[in-house]
Image (cartoon, rainbow, N blue to C red; front, top):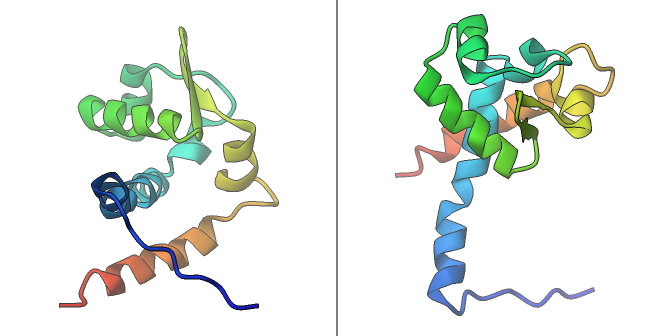
Length: 116
């Protein structure tokens, strides 16, 4: 079956394509600090989670806000907690953990970053 190529026809589409790098970078950053595994199955405030991870509160707040926007964390009055998807695929203790696959993607990210 022949596929018809998709063309960018508006600046909004162009901008969205240019910013598409953000979500993978956010996910890779969370995996680098083992965020999903260390969150376990509880709610975390940013100050407590930052202390638990040894991370900056400001950076972690930005990271968690973006992960919640992407549907990988849930923000509630008591803090942040994992979604069922994150528990299943992003926690190391899960039999369905996909961190190794995402690690491969991250290594490819580095290679693609040196095209020029």
